[in-house]
Amino acid sequence: MQARPIRTGLVLKGRKIARLTPAERARLEGAISEVRTVPARSILVHKGEHLEHSTLLLRGFLSRAVVDRLGQSQCVSLHIAGDLVDLHAYPMKQLDHDVVALSDAEVAILPHRAIKAIAERDAELTRKLWFATLLDAAMHREWIFRLGRLDALGRVCHFFAETGARLQAVGIGTVERYALPMTQTDIGQACGLTSVHVSRVLKLLRDGEICVFKDGAVEVLNHESLVRRGQFDPAYLYLDDPPRP
Amino acid sequence: MAGTDLSEPFNEAGQVSVEDGVVLVDGPDGVAISLTPAAARTFGERLIAAADEAQG
Image (cartoon, rainbow over all chains, first blue to last red; front, top):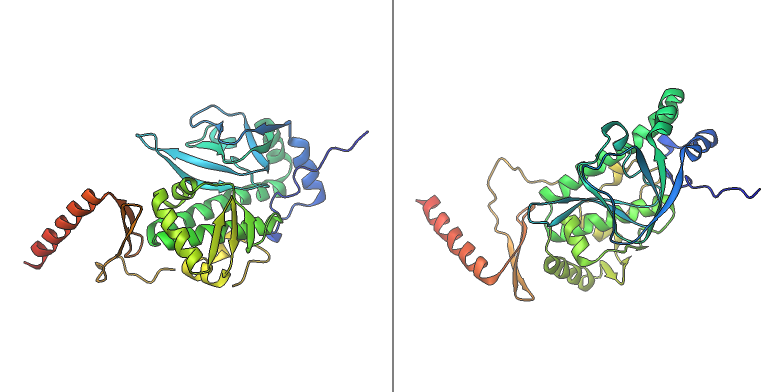
């Protein structure tokens, strides 16, 4: 019999404080009921929809989006492979935002009955899943800081520095170079900027030889400047090996 | 992380630039807005009027 591929290999990777043991990983693998592919630019979960499962992102990029009364979207978080995207749906049974695919993506479905079984039988794995949700909360706090206290250039620098650090932690990029299948409009929605403002910032970053965003990829030319300009302190990501300028 | 005391008003003006026919305002602190030329003109006039009023 052919062994199934490991689908939880990136979950909490790079975080010793919540590293999964082989037994915990096997238990989480066993909780997956199916794997789905999600086309780019489609909505995976709608705000308010009743949910009996949560989602683990296996491949691609997802975002959480809140839409205003005029239909304009604000990206309130970015998700990369290995993220438990909506574990909070387990106790809440619905989301207060949409989950949108930024690229073609592959997700694993975790039925809530399986998560309940983990919660009832495995306190340590439950703590680690709770950690994953708290990590989301820590990033949300940082995104509030980004929008509240940083100017346009600082916001984009912070966003690029954070995304690079997260991708490097799970081994699908480095802080110097990584794929980011977002448009300038997407970056604007994550940073509270118009696309023309993002265009201006990207030009400043390129001319200042700090960073180049082109063809869905980020190349950081001067990580120290990127981090300093974005006031990026990776402590809130709880990484074993945080990037140092 | 930021060093600005938000209990006090800013005593430095934000930076203003133009990109593709749009007026961009950056800073102070977390200010980052894009305005059409007409909106920027009106905004500027309102700022000047308010500054005059605030100075008495």
